[in-house]
Image (cartoon, rainbow, N blue to C red; front, side, top):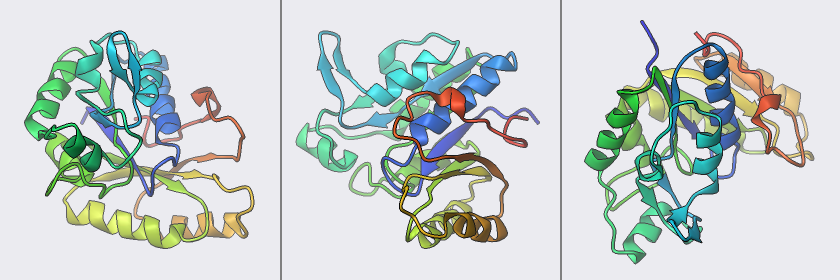
Length: 225
């Protein structure tokens, strides 16, 4: 069965989702697929003459080879760098899954695969009763989990994985992001997660001051199949 794309989520915010999403998109482009990127909801966006713009969304779009209007790849953009449901409420906006799904289907109609990057972590609220998990379920894509390797991540990763399974989603793979240079026993933490998570470790991101270049990330099988 052809993988229609992936939904990239994480154990927290600022955990490396954009770097991973860009790496997956680049891998698929190199394999000859038509690839589109999508950041359905983004906060912390910059005002521009064309409207609010998310640096994460623009970074993802820059490595894809299916052109799309910005409003299609990022239907909901909010300026405050705060939780998206709070930003939405302050702007008088209601995040609607139907609008996001319509945008996703527009991209999917022109692409072989769509890389969708979530916002924050798996259960971050998007509205009064809506979460990122509800969005992933609606789009019905395999999930890639980015784990920030640091104190507490074992609990965060295992709970997130449990919730992904409980929502009926498939965990396609996970990424270990060494985001804390002072983390003690980082290798042992990764080994513990490999023994416990029901999916393959597809990449490890070493600690770097600047993670701007997604080319440094090599995504291993089976995610690239």
